[in-house]
Length: 158
Image: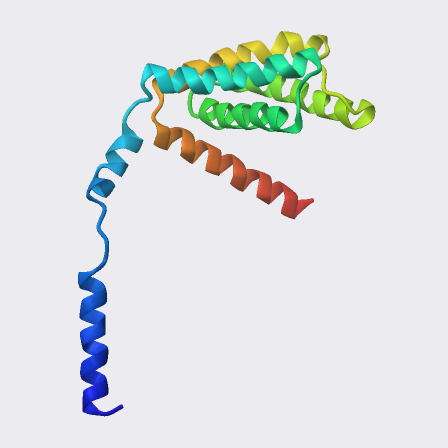
């Protein structure tokens, strides 16, 4: 590489750095993730989970509804482990009922809830809604990522 090529390469590097787009609100992103959910955001997420549960109990549920309910219970379990054993027990009972719903779907081809699910899932949804109202987006995202990591470890070990 001769002198003129080195100068051109250095000039292009400085131009690329100078022309880089900087988003002014990028500084605020970590702050927004660490703030508590406002009432509207929490209620939107809670209603989505409750509607998925409603659809699953009426037989109109889809795989997406099931996945939403399962992810909500996984996030609730991760958060419950840091709170109390009673909360963990509530979530584990709900997860057992959700797994039974999945097994029923695989047998019959349609989602539906049995008596255990009707008894155990609503308290977990109440707990999940309380978590949403007192948590930040960052905490809930971290819990979701932790649940994904645990599922991947289970898949690898199986």
